[in-house]
Image (cartoon, rainbow over all chains, first blue to last red):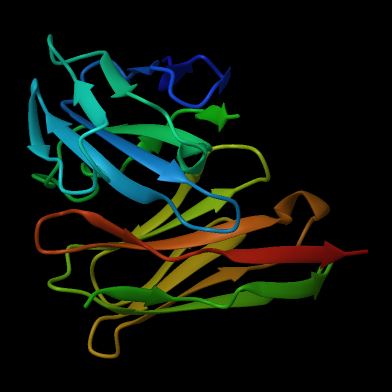
Length: 119
Length: 109
């Protein structure tokens, strides 16, 4: 079946602009995660959704970052007043559940990422 | 605090065996994951350990010792395509993944 998809694959914007990044999870996966990753680092957690609600948004760096998942499927990560330091790869992942009811059901599967460059 | 430690870089020869270690300190433990990430691509799931012992999956095996806070990923019969970063991640008490920075594995002919 189809994996996690993310659009756009690349985004170049100017400092101060607004951007939206989209994630389409694996069908039937209730949990959806946003991470960002800089070169040579592991993924940095931003936010995760269980269904439509943000179950944990403790990783969002500041109030310029916001994410929604209105129908419990597709999610959009929104960044206002972008700064050069926001440049990174933004990864989305989904899992069947956020906590494993059966062993391994919380395994996260990643999309290809959106490479964001803020000039 | 929570942290995951793994070597930054390792080099191995095609056809050989390599072991990538990971040690962790987390608030709670609900499983340890290994992911492979090729340059410019997203992480792909390799293995999951929640009980002590060795899990074998083809050329790749993963070992866990919960009492020691330690895991390793063993790659056998190395191929050039195994050149990638290998990420260790632990699910904490809230099932949040705590990630290591990754080990860049370089395979030489």
